[in-house]
Image 1 (cartoon, one colour):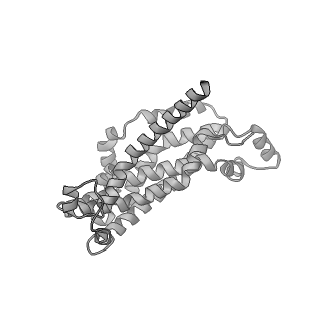
Image 2: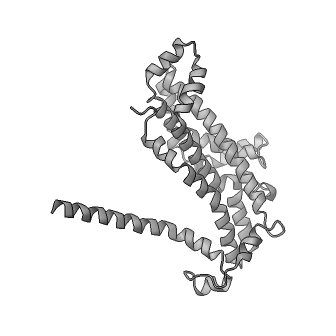
Image 3: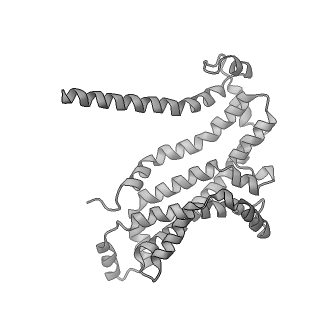
Length: 279
């Protein structure tokens, strides 16, 4: 009886997860399939199979004469990778200092960073715009990169510090006995052991930067600097009467973020739940 009940519970859990997976994937599938339809097909049968399949929609999106997709893609990549690299460097250094270096007021400094988690970015929009204008960072990649890094740092530091705390003290003592400096210990021992959490930090920063719309909208006025989310809105305004083309643009814009996640999903789980050194 107990075994039967357990099987029933497991079957119900799988059924529930399947339903949630379908509900999650359905909008993505509709967007991708909608990109292969004509506007008439979208209006008459949203859930139907494209007949005929309109490959021309996707070809038009990647056509430089009709779309700025590749320019938007390049801008998003520049902003994203710069944000990720700066975030990894700063969060690793700060997390290591707050984890391994003893100094007066360390916990106060860490608490100060944690307070950043309570600060909604929307509140800072007006003073942020004034500051960026004063520093001549409008229509500049760094005008987006620096605020993105700053807003993400509190959470990133919390993750890296927590992970670094799990590295055995014996490793640190052995490194110092071998005349290894704190920076050398960080580079040669801590960083290799911290691949899961660093990958997690990098991927979260990637996805956040890739999907960020409001901050680039605040900074960029030049269409040649538009990122993909802004490119979607610009493309939608250009082809407002042809939603099949817009869906094709959105589908292609989603591909890099999905690839990033699929490649690094294992490291995300290890980074959030695993330890630095397995016993």
